[in-house]
Amino acid sequence: MPTMMKAAIFVEPGRIEIEDKPIPAIGPNDALMRVTTTTICGTDVHILKGEYSVERGLTIGHEPVGVIEKLGANVKGYKEGQRVIAGAICPSFTSYACQDDCCSQDGGHHGHGYKPMGGWRFGNTIDGAQAEYLLVPDAQANLSPVPDGLTDEQVLMCPDIMSTGFAGAEAAGIKIGDTVAVFAQGPIGLCATAGARLRGAGMIIAVDGVDERLAMAKQMGADVTLDFRKVDVVEEILKITGGRGVDSAIEALGLQQTFESALRVLKPGGTLSSLGVYSQDLTIPLGAFCAGLGDHKIVTSLCPGGKERMRRLMSIIAAGRLDLGPMVTHRYALENIVEAYDLFSHQRDGVLKVALKVS
Image 1 (cartoon, rainbow, N blue to C red):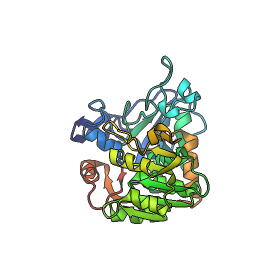
Image 2 (image 1 turned 120 degrees about the vertical axis):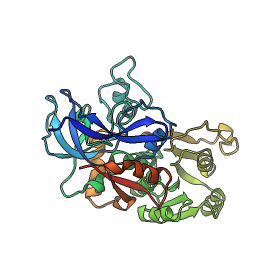
Image 3 (image 1 turned 180 degrees about the horizontal axis):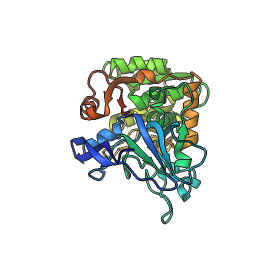
Image 4 (image 1 turned 90 degrees about the horizontal axis):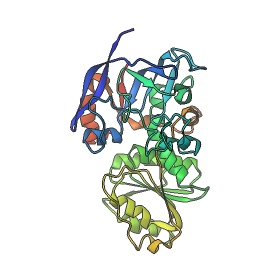
């Protein structure tokens, strides 16, 4: 086995480059995954731009599909050569936060055991998935076998995008027959749209300003698509609902404008489920908030991880209930990742998701 690997590392704001790094040495509770396919996330772009701070030299990425290369002595029930994924969120499942059903906020074994976004380790606090090999910590809890017959690209969205989008639909508390608006139809918003359909929404209204994404939203289950370039979406949604408003609105972009629009279209007692990554302070408009008396709920989500979450998501794919394959619009080899980042970060050529072929 080689001792060195290729990895995409953060150099400085504006620079992610391929460099040689030592293949990680695993401990008794870890596994070494040979990555076969991974992808680029919007959060990685925030890191590239310097909007989210990580250590220089850190390997980026948090969406791995691969094969078990080596298992730690304490990791049971798996075998080397087995195809697996690991969630972008890879909690310890032993902290106070994890046992309080807040695994994404896992603070480990120190103090009170809570840390904002602490379960997000890959490409944040430890080396990530845009590399030939990946150390998976707490592997017993985080490795999830890929069902026979599913390709890498079929399960590529499970570690993050699908889990995040579905979390937004789950947090929205969608009931059978509900009317739901989903603001922004990027990869996460599209998965939120699909999640709303699977939760039994009676009407799904998808909002975006890119024709290709609105068309994809229809494939994911949207009943109505609204182009914010052409209509006042708040006015239109209130018209569609007869002035009532929607039962829940999912915000999947992370901007003041979309957050505010999502709040303005809620019925009294409705839920705003926020998935966007915000880079500026938010302001809550008094009227839309009904002066704090509208019985609204505002909830946020960070994608759930762990092997059971991954198993459930892959079971939906395996059963044919959802096909996220069309979301992969471009493919690059790992060594061409700088070119892939340039395409994805500038949102050219109708890109939704890029599949990075590693091995």
